[in-house]
Amino acid sequence: MNDSLKTLLIIGFLILIFWNLGAGLYYLLVDKGQSKRTVNALTWRIGLSALLFALVALGIYTGVIKPHGIGG
Image 1 (cartoon, rainbow, N blue to C red):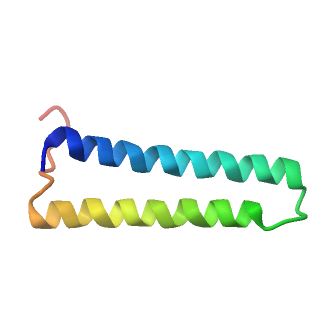
Image 2: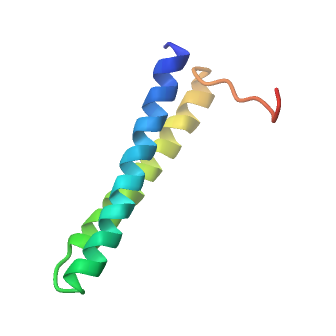
């Protein structure tokens, strides 16, 4: 897999995670606890974060992603 494609995939996941975090904040302020949209948005954020973490761990385990130290 190309390095730029891996980076793009990770950045895409981070954008979705921040989008759902912002949506949760927006729904919290607008709905004032009258709907479950806040809970749904934050549940999606947690799920995407866990999936990203699992994919990075799997990538490191299989050798697709090679971790390096700071400045390495």
